[in-house]
Image 1 (cartoon, rainbow, N blue to C red):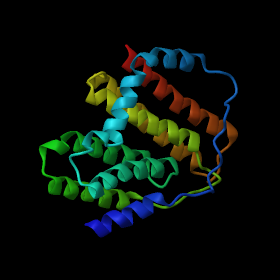
Image 2 (cartoon, one colour; image 1 turned 120 degrees about the vertical axis):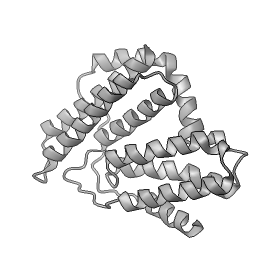
Image 3 (cartoon, rainbow, N blue to C red; image 1 turned 180 degrees about the vertical axis):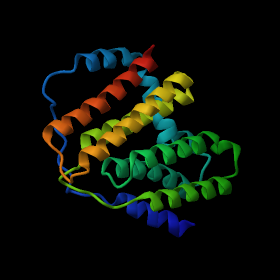
Image 4 (tube, rainbow, N blue to C red; image 1 turned 90 degrees about the vertical axis):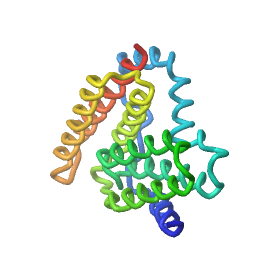
Length: 216
């Protein structure tokens, strides 16, 4: 199992310089996003603390061996990196990430050996889900980053019960629709600037809706 953890960590650590650089500006300021971020400020600190404790596995420090603590911390970091670089689909990221959050939340209820075993299963699942294909012509790093952000906000909302089951279903439908839109836009192996902007707008709207829901 230790060998598998090392192999998986190496796979996740492999990046790429082929993806187009993210744009620092997207043109006109999205006023809805500005308002949503201002409202979200009321729970921003709680979200960041939760992210560090659960996604970063800080809540497990002291209860795991140094090796297992390092493995669990590097796992999510690699998972997040992979989805942003399009080596892992958003769907797989959502599926594996949900299992990861559940594992960390329940870690103290199981033995360290059992925890390591379950983490190993997730690492195998993640490795098998990587496709390793990065297309510089159709890469969408801005969209990928927003999708990853949306997933984190959704997990936080579910874990803290700040998001209702109905809202969760609505958000997940929109996430699926965005994935379908991405596939359609990339089906001809090229991506126009307008198509790219449309995808970014759709991703931003999902994040905005999540921030508004969490702040309400």
